[in-house]
Length: 305
Image (cartoon, rainbow, N blue to C red; front, side):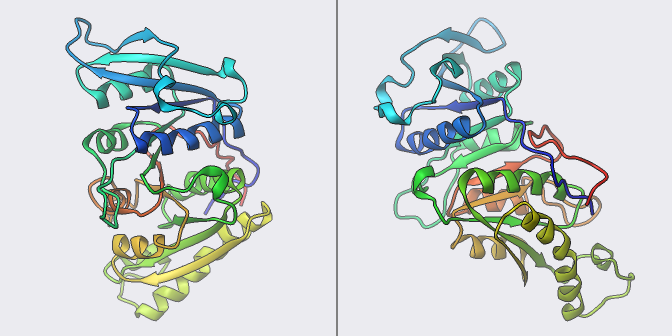
């Protein structure tokens, strides 16, 4: 397995779509934190859903997008010149967000999600769900009960891995996010006995569950060591069971979760619509989704590891 040791996140433009809701306010705090951490340009937009003559997104310059969010003076982007406020007109809120992200070469979308009060698990709204499914760049979804960035000290970042080609960019994102927030990392692999044994480097005959667990622990050793070399506190963990349910159980004690939406071709796939979608929809903490088939802002250095 190849793991990037020295490559760092290249995050130049963050898009924060807002509707003025409490969920959007939670997401704004994280968008500002990441913009300041990575010296990125922050694009703040409010989408107005109405018929437009043009098929593409219509942008209207507006310096009052944040006016009704009651943003404290000490919680803004450190360099005001790095913030752009736009009002977007489109027939669909999700389409407007996706069009804006594409046209402005956005590296990350930070999006608030609307959960239901009294429900333990996060339920995505239709706009957030469509953006997560279709965006080519990573998407960071933040729910109503998320911790503030400055209140997440000593937090834990949960990173489910599946030993696929998506693992290297996933770990690159996880490493730099953990450093930006000061998180420790839990690397989690879930052994599902029905997965083909060659995932673990074994022959095609069916090995015992204990054998699979042992091989998974061995496979986690290399990324664990690489992350520790980057100065991070890392705990590898192997569990057995259904992948989505197990990840969600472990996420109950996590501050944030980073997951890839791509798995192993021809076998069990971590695609939106299966494991990843279930995790993003139901996770009790913010979720950073890395689209392995799309753009990534963590530059992966090959040939080392």
